[in-house]
Image (tube, rainbow, N blue to C red; front, side, top):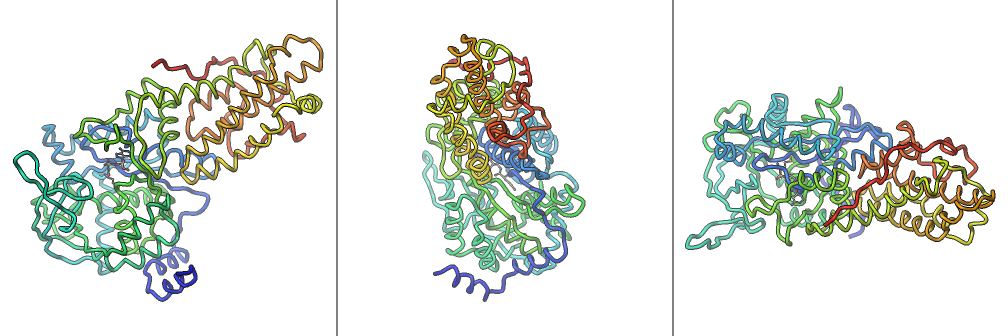
Amino acid sequence: MTAHMKCFQFNKMKLLYLKIINRAFASVKTNNSSSYFVTTPIFYLNGVPHIGHLQSCLYADAFARINRLLGKEVIFSTGTDEHGLKVLQAAETNKLTPIDYCDEMSSTFEKAFKEANISYTHFIRTTNVKHKEMVQDFWCKLDKNGHISKGKYTGWYSVIEEAFVPTAQVKEVREGSQFKTVSIETGSPVERMEEENYVFCLPKFQNDLLYWLSKDVVKPLIFADDLKKWIEEGLTDLSISRPRTRCSWGVPVPNDETQVVYVWLDALVNYLTVGKNAAQSLEWPASCHVIGKDILKFHAIFWPAFLIAAGYEPPREIFCHSHWTVNYEKMSKSKGNVIDPKLLIDKYDVDGFRYFLLRASVPNSDTNYSETKIHRMLNAELCDTLGNLLSRSCAKSLNPQQIFPPFSHEAFCSLKETNIQHIIDSTSKLPETVKKHFLEGYFYKGIDSMLDCLRDTNAFVQHTKPWVLVKQQDTEAQQKLFTILHTVLEVLRICSLLLQPIIPTLTAKVLAKIGVSEMERSWQNIICFPSFHNLPNKLEGQPLNNDNIPLYERRKS
Ligand code: MSP
């Protein structure tokens, strides 16, 4: 079917979504292009943070930081998902009241995020009063718009996923001498349920969802294809409350004290709670929800349908990432194979940890965790490539004046036989290439293109032998040496400015060392090789900072 025909088909449908968009543009302030609102999922408190949780946070953090660098005002929210059976059971196991347990665990997550230098602006807890009010208000909007009815649910429930599982998607498996029923998709055990609850008519939103998805809102596209398939297979009604007798730990349904709001509806509304409290008028829709692939259905089917039903615009983008595996198996508390982020931060420093997670992971496929991989990557890239270039260009033996030396066009001509022109050309292309990859969530690709330039520049140093030039007294040799060092420092400046979203502490160290002030570290300052282009260059002739190098200590295995 051609794009035109598809569009025509959609035009014929009555799409609630389009009505909402039109209304949004006509009246309410919608999230504009000078602001960027990014979110992480909110985290269950039934276990301690692991690197999988940090992966969602780091993607969101890198999105927040690149957008700040580009001059946007960023709202970045994260937080904890505190209601539901899973958390209630964990509190009971720990012999604590639910709220005491949540207070303790929520601060463990907050601490872990601070240790990883996650630059969130809002930390939300679903037990906050403001959030509970927002959930109830959202419920009333769904109800007023006629999308909630009361029904009887008979079927299966998975506590691990806090999700109802259709009968067609469960199977019986043998465990020792016993049989148990599990979800086919995830393998988690399910319990038989028969209860009265409120139901949301999801199938009504099939066309709206397909229309929304046709705007390429879910990235990478491979995940959007899965979603379209699920939607086209047919949606079923969704239970959106639980009897209080089954799960007392939740937000009460307005005007019905016997029921609590289903934990996923409660959790998803956290994004609106932040949007409402972050700005003077509602900051909505969110620019980007970062999520892992296991919670795609909840964010890219249930959530946009709920939003459209309640009269809100659905999210602008959902960025979905794949998972870390250990020995090619899913990381899980029950298997006891979770990797503690704190241990990695202690061993490799916060930026080594951040670099590894963003450099080694690929959004569209799972990555297997390996300690050898971390070692090799950090030693080869942060130490031998970035660090080495900095130590060489700033070493007293090669740069006795300890300055950002001037560039000479004459010396540049005498270096024509080297790859200096290639270095200038390829480094000058970096800002656009890196911006594109980073904004698309392909951080590893952006890093890769910078590493190519850094490696070429190390080879350039090797080839031009500045250690020979430094011993020669004539002006020609001096100018040549200065031009080589100038070029190297310029490559370091550009790569460090662009690497700020990934390794903010190390890049701050490099930039301080070569004399780039904090005021000169934004996107507008990434003018490449100004001296080569005969543009003013404040750094030329400035003293280097006497901060310590090496930048990143080699790790021993
Ligand atoms: N509470 C829900 C989210 C509600 S959002 C409205 C939840 N919480 S979670 O703690 O189980 O997961 C939070 C995030 O961690 C998800 O994005 C999930 O994909 C991510 N990860 C959990 N394990 C992971 C890996 N092994 N690897 C990468 N990310 C993983 O779901």
